[in-house]
Amino acid sequence: VSELKEPQVSSHKTCIYGINGTRIHVKYFSRTLGRTNVTYDPEREMKAEYGMLKEFEKNGFSSGRYRIVRTLGYNEKLDCALATVYVGGETLLSIIYDAINNDRDKELLKALDATAGLLKRIHSVMPQSSRADGAEMFYSYLKSMLYLEEQGVMDGFHRRAMKGLSRWY
Image (cartoon, rainbow, N blue to C red; front, side, top):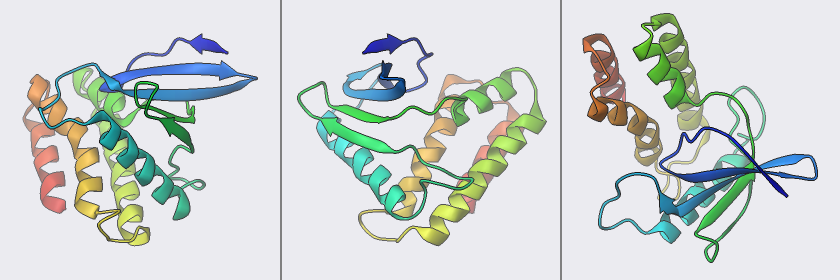
């Protein structure tokens, strides 16, 4: 087992491990990198994310254009660790942040278009139940935009785009 270096793009400590030629991504819910509210429960958050990822897998999001990472398991005793198969590439947050900072609106629109496509598929395929509530899923994607707004990096155009997305739902 070897730890591989990757930039941190999560609100929690994450590590990439190489195991027999396979890369495993581990997110530690007990090791937050930023602020949390007083009701934050790492075990509950870890199990909720695990359950949501399993729900996506069950509903066909393990293949096709809009794929969700495959979950491998979790361990409460190991800093609430959630293990998934590693998927390389940029995150939506990094694409949006880079597009805003470097004034690349075409890339931002592509990222937002991909997000809209994923959200459309989620709302057409996923069951609307207490287990997979649509509003909670949408909020998880909107959180990246809200974070950028809090950091003060969004200009008027991007703020209007964010407001438009939030009204869409």
